[in-house]
Amino acid sequence: MTAARQAGSSRARRTLAIAVKELRQIRRDRRTLMTLLLLPAFLLLLYGYALNFDVRNIRLAVQDNDRSAASRDVISAFVNSGYFDLVQEVSSDEAIVAALDRGDARAVLVIPSRFGRDTTTGRPTAVQLVISGDNANTATTVMGYALNLVSALSARYELQARLGSPGGPIVTVEPRVWYNPELRSVLFLVPGLIAYIAMLTAVVSTALSIVREKEVGTMEQVRMAPVGPLAYVMGKTVPYFFISLASSMAIVGLAMLLFDLPMRGSWPMLLGAVSLFLVGALAFGLLISTIAETQQVAFQVALLMSFLPTLMLSGFIFPIASMPVVLQAITRIVPARYFLTALRGIVLKGVGFEVVWPQLMALSIFAVVIVALASLRLQREWT
Image 1 (cartoon, rainbow, N blue to C red):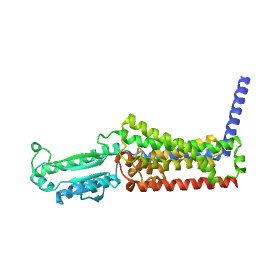
Image 2: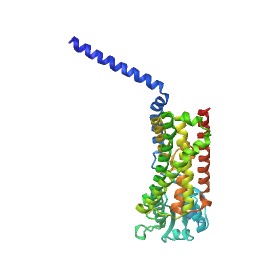
Image 3: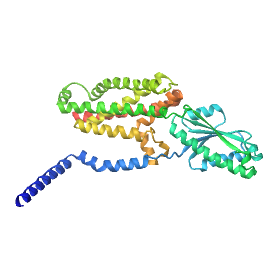
Image 4: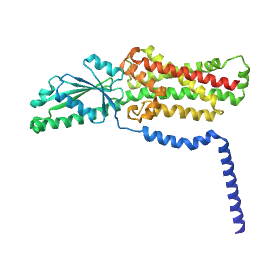
């Protein structure tokens, strides 16, 4: 009995010693400690707020060809539903195309000229809803909202006209989905996957490069060489840039071959957008590598900083308009947000430079800023 007690007590002391040693090690490694303490709370807040499948704040444009009390009732029903925000009025088909191409509106409500007279006399009529189908999930939800709203309006007009069920519905909606008429989810997911894969591989590849030299001891030799920080950063980026560019374009080609992804825009513009996005992603990986001391830390930070923002805060899966205002503001510094908008516009809509130049400008600014930060950080380490 005494031997058993001694063995148990000895085992408990060893376990305690190992636990104390592990706590000391964690306390010394402040990065790991902060990750263990803050990352679970961060993920809880991020997933809790961003994982929202309710589509709200849908940008709605209206072409009211009737200008009657009945047409204003229809517009009010859409706006007061809490799902639609009236952003503009259009007066021509060209204005409808421009609003959808630029992303100013997600849907356009078109009311015919005899709408008020037909509803008053009990004659069946239809309003048209033109929906942008570049995001198939959102388009399907928008269509469902519209059908429910118009069905409720039609029931009210039937009651007022005392037609009852034999006359059928007075008001119906005729949805027209552009850019993705079949609402194929693959046309919505593939552009997001291109951005996600390109961002993840580019950041991870360069994040490990400088750290690897730190671990093998060759960084000291680089510091003694007559090479400036900016030249060193650019020299590190160029090989990975061409590899990542070839990989990204191969993904586009495979998507067209296997998933019938259309290419309605300009290939040079697509190449330019992918290039700007990759330059920023590669430079971001280099910036991470100047901060991390080991490849393991660099890999973990690269995954965290590229995986979550690209997946959650870019509009890849969850609509940005449905997120809280604070998260919407944070998405403005996520490059994948602008790349996705440009990519879907070029590939699915066939828009030109006059439409996507704000996104290309944002990607350019991000690339320049991150390259400068990586160079400054590396210069500080060398001095």
